[in-house]
Length: 167
Image (cartoon, rainbow, N blue to C red):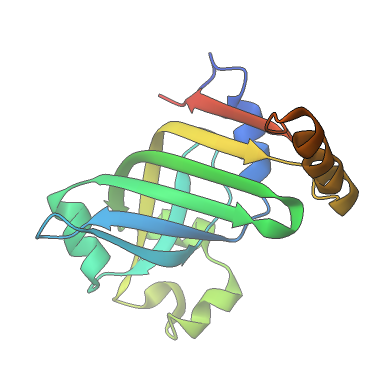
């Protein structure tokens, strides 16, 4: 069980929705105050609910996180109509044992020297809040929602949506 959001009943669902989404768009704040997003391969959330990402030490995101640790993660799985946004504080982790624990062989494409690569680091995101949208992916359900909206003039409510306190 994840510790973040332990008082929010929607926290478990949020973590369940993102556990199989492998790519998250990580947004940081650039030096001029603009937002900068990039795709990051998401590791499985740990027992505390923290989210982990491997990165190169010498990258713009590392400079941005050092200056402003607030980040946003956007997860999207259009095939299942699942969308999740998580905001939190990012921390740079260089601990060799943690890097080895989270390492998987496909990462060698970015870190040819493996866990001994001098450029390797981790970003740990401590989530503070999140939001999810989880809709049925069935075309029939969407057609029904469209037809109902045309007939009744009301927007359909095709799935679950919740704001989640993760702090």
